Length: 229
Image (cartoon, rainbow, N blue to C red; front, side, top):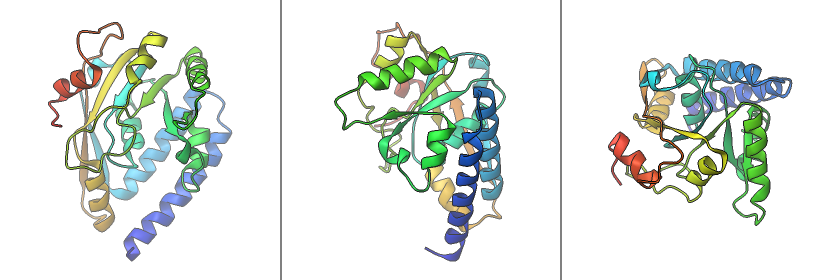
């Protein structure tokens, strides 16, 4: 790790934990959304990255959704936060157990608004109860259906099973989002050269009715954004 990477790592650790403590005191979705957006703005300002959004007109600014996005980088949740900044849409991220217990992200993840998904547990009933409770508080659900970061030389990896079930069980409209720029490449470039102005392009797709069974959800997503396997 070189000096620039160390500097960014220290700054990111400080920023993430600072907002993790702030989020612990937030009591409403609006307060959490404001703090999460403030965090994202601070991070991308430091990295000199601009988020460019298309298709936002397809989003009901007061809607409640199951939002799904592709996933290549640790900054992707912040990318989505920036893409939705001109709406009132606030979502709880489905987060793996490792993130809950992470020294780097744990406090932010737990306090910022998330639902624990423990794939090693046989008790998935609690997961769906947590989702139901979140929806009753007017939150949306945000998920990376690939399950983990895509480090392959492909646009998209296979979706994990169960994503569509979340929408069906809770009668949630599905909001597809595609981070068209390789956000991991953008992050690496930004760390190496913070003077260089970078852009990450984000595209919102057409809302998918949860009752629509005419096509597999992954295939519908691929067709919508013309992604390759």
